[in-house]
Length: 138
Image (cartoon, rainbow, N blue to C red; front, side, top):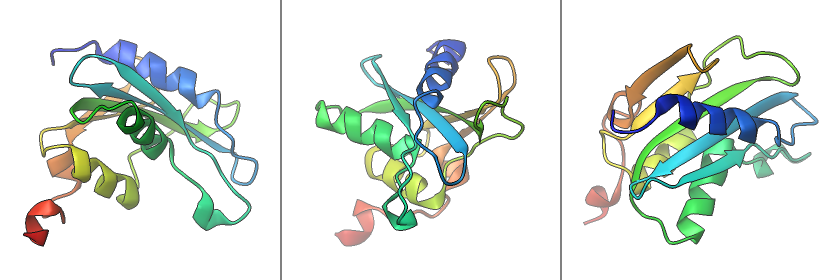
């Protein structure tokens, strides 16, 4: 990969510390890397009306898009119970995968990490085969 995976994971770990998850206690941080090399952090923000909750990945994408970014290389995601080391890999939910497909190609890199050294890498195409996108609306 042509970017520093551990640096991106470190930024996701930092974003995780800002999560607002008083209901589930599950804190997620994400760091989205633009094609220009800038990282956009995001954390999950829960709401008493669960449908209004927003995932860390979407927060990162919304921040980047608001800044004018439209080209993305990768995202690192770290999640687990508050004040605990992540025990599992936090892969993006289906809604986040759909948002990723709006802005990213199938080779977009997704890094689900527990630590700087313990992570899994896959592509959007692997996580969202046969996705629905703008091509279906033409």
